[in-house]
Amino acid sequence: METAQIILTPEAEEIQTKALTIPEKAKAIVITDAGSYVKASELWNSIRAMRKKVADTFDPMIAHWHQGHRLAIKKKSEIDMPLESAEKYTKGKMNTWEAGQECIRKAGETRLREEDRKREEDTRLAAAIEAEKAGDKEEAEAILEEPVQGAPVVVPKTVPKIPGGPVFRTIWKHQVVDLIMLVKAVAAGQVPLAAIKADDVFLGQQARSLKGALRIPGVEVYSERC
Image (cartoon, rainbow, N blue to C red; front, side, top):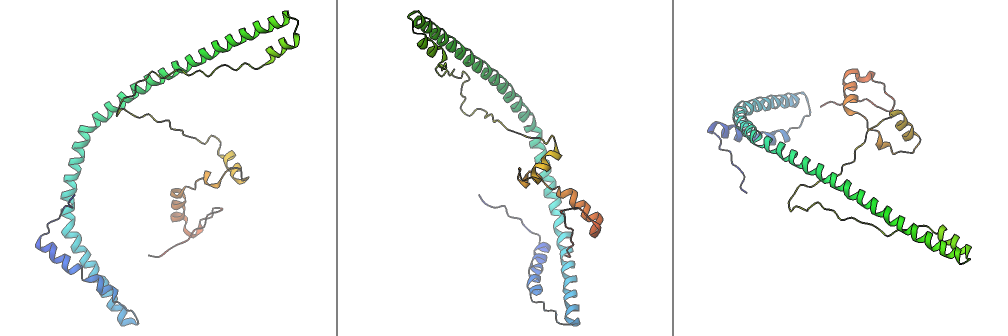
């Protein structure tokens, strides 16, 4: 796929040409005394001025393109949102019906297993009675004590497989119901430390607000210049 090309105005091209020469000048800076420090500051000011020209030239163009981009996104959303809602609604209906069919299927398996177990018990009981009638009480007791193991029962699913149809996922989630208990478990080494997440947003706000006065166990505050 071809990359879209931006056509620059003569003014923008001139600014681009001048701007591309500045990085090499910056790389050539060597500050050894006050005079060279002053020259570096002059270059810094010229870079700032050039960056303002770049912003003044390109920001209106970006705003224009951004507005067109926003309008396209808005129109797409207006058309697609009702379709998305319809898709979710239909999938929800399908999911509800499929879940109901699965409950019916499992109930059928449970019923058939129980029926099979009852038949096995009746057969065992009849065999034990016959053994006792024959005078073999030990055999009768052995028959009754033997665990009943019915044959595996699997009721096939009745939900049709739809090519390209929706895919239903089972998602497991969690919630912390006792934070103190969790912290104690981490402290005792029963749970990995990763189970507790430090809130960087909160700690960052505290560091910016209290600066060097911040005192939180296990947290170190520091500063950087840029």
